[in-house]
Every structure is written in structure tokens, then in C-alpha cells.
Amino acid sequence: MKPIWKFRLLALLIVLVVGTVSIADFAAEVLRPARPSVPTPGSPPTAPDALAAAAFATKIAPFREDLRADEAAMRAAEVLASKGPGSLSTNEAVQTAVRTALGIGPHDARMWLTLALLRAHGNLGVASIVEPLKMSYFTGPSQAELIPPRLAVVSSINAISDPDLQELAAGDVRAILTRFADLRPLLVTAYARGSVAGKRLLDDSVKTVDPAFISTLHAAH
Image 1 (tube, one colour):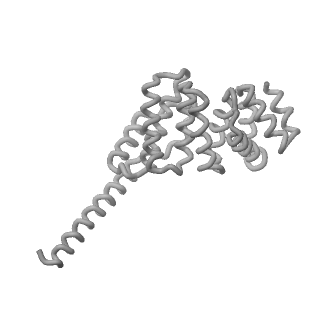
Image 2 (cartoon, rainbow, N blue to C red):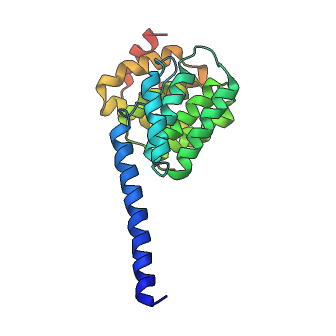
């Protein structure tokens, strides 16, 4: 085969691959449901049609981390909607989906937090929660939507011995007190529901920024 035909064949293959990927990407973008928020314990489960649409979009464009993350977040919402720990096997299956999304996009703070929430919901121990929780801080330190669920889980931990996690969590408290005043009621709720270690962390963090707010925290206890 002449070199010119080899080049033309290669060019045709490239065009076909790029075209196929582009069409798949466009179709997935059209079919995907609205981006889900961070799943939280006790939140309503995902609507079946939205979950089906997310799963279909992922199949069409499996190379898209954001689509995998959306589907994993929706599946996590179903697990976290149950009041008890629920099925451990289902929890672990969703954790696998979250880790798959993180394998493509390790920068996704929402997925790191989702992984921590799933492990906390399954009562899998503090050690399994701390690392993904810290990664959610490292990859999304200023994402307002992550603060409420992150604060809820960190304040519920019975023993916060990791100094990095303590400082990172204190950063969220400072952000609420200085930048997100509308989230202050979340501090009160987290304090009322928090563990002894969580209450101590909130006390110490609030004192350094707004000592007057301590009385509001304690009134909710």
C-alpha cells in the first residue's frame, strides 16, 4: 500500500473515532438529568427516572467523569435516605461506583465527601472516614455546597485525633462565621447533634472567630 493511502486510512480512522466520541458526548449531554447536589443522610432518594437517565448517559459516554460522578451521587442518595445503615452490600457497591469516578477525576471534592458519608452511614469506623473527608477539604476548600454535609459528618465523629482534620474542619467553621452568615444555623444544629469531640471542635473553632456566638451554640445543647 502506498504511503499516501496509509495516511488517508489513518486520517479516516481518526475522523471516525473523534466523530463517534463527539456524538456520544453530545447525546449524553442531552440525555443527562440535572446535576444532583451532594447526597446527605436523610435526604429524599433519587427519582427512578432521573437515576435511569443518569445511568444511560454514563453508558453512552463512559469516559466522562462528571457523568459517572452524577450517577454515583444519585445512587448514594438512595443509600443515605435510609435511617439505619441499610444493606452493607449495597453501600459497598455504591462506594465502588464512587471510587471508579474518583479514579477518572480525583479532583472531585463532591465524590470524596460522598465516599466519607457512605462509610459513616455504614458504621465502617472513624479510620475509614477520615481520609476521604480530608480529601474533600483539600480538593474543595471553598465550595459552599460541601460545608453543610461536611460539618455534619465531622461533628459526629466520636474521636477527632487527626490534627489536619481538626484544622480543616475549623476552616469550614471560620468560613461560616465570616463569609456564609446564612449557614450559621447549621453550626447550632451540628452542635446539638454532635459528639463530645465534635462539640469541643466547634467550641474551639468558634471562640477564635466569634466568641459571642458560643452562647448561641450552648443554648441549643
